[in-house]
Image (cartoon, helix red, strand yellow):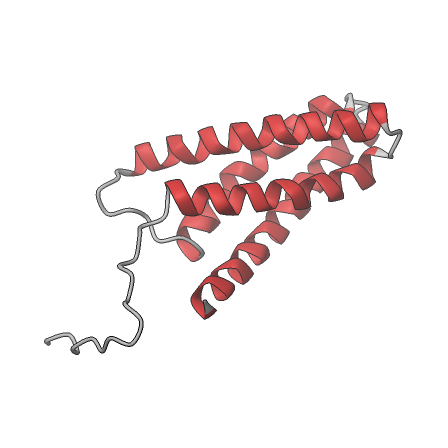
Length: 143
């Protein structure tokens, strides 16, 4: 359980870095370049996904040994595209249906999508660790 908490903490740090990138690009495109918020949100999310992949696979998740990097990246991107769809839908609902400012909506939506991202990446990308049976003692590895 402690390992999972540490992993989620690392995921949160990577997520915070990527959120700053995502949020910054979205605001920059929307405010400076008058890009519609749904388009700027899609562009910023896409940029942050690439950074997120690089950082996540380096510091958060252990890749499956039998999966090549191209397949790993494709799965990561596919899961992220679903996350983008969820982001766009929730942004539209918050902004257009509930009249919440797009900057505030982005913070709330990011929190929701972050949980989706962690769970799906853990299920589909991360190497599965062998489960230790409760009360069993494992022999030390031979050197």
